[in-house]
Amino acid sequence: MPPAQRYCAFLRAINVSGHTVKMDKLRTLFTEIGFANVATYIASGNVIFETPATSTGKLEAQIERHLQQALGYAVITFVRTVPELAAIADDTPVLPTNQKVHGLYVLFLKAPLSTETQTQLLALNSETDEFHVHGCEFYWLCRIQQRDSPLFSGTLLTKTVGVPMTMRSATTVKKLAAKYAVSR
Image (cartoon, rainbow, N blue to C red; front, side, top):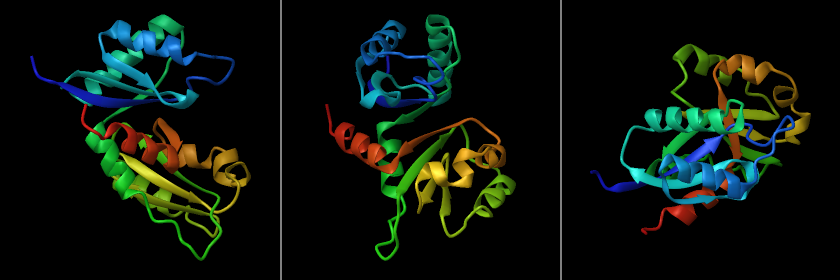
């Protein structure tokens, strides 16, 4: 059996639209799948776990099936290895020091965006919103309150990207990478 590897699952919309899952319940659900050393980080659906090395795609499908059965609704899941998480944190664009910035976010995808979709996303760059694409993630620098951005409050960003995604603040991603990058 391959050695255990540490992963981080980012769950989309786990606690929205009238659905509430306590973090202890979420840890139990991941343990039921057979994962070890399960931990959660803040109540936005970040679950760290260990399992023998396997493909992240298979892990995503396994987690999604189990959560659907246990919770009764779909929870789209994005899994990254801890080394991938560290690379994502390292790739986060540096915030400009001479400009007001309200937030920097990492948006997780199942697969890299097509060249055409990347072009369409980058065409949304403006004085208030700036995007950087890297692999299976893209970064959103928002210079105003996120809720005030026409890209967040409307469906333009979702329609442009055209595939499921989930978002975390760059701060959360960096804290997760720092906390779990250390050897067991």
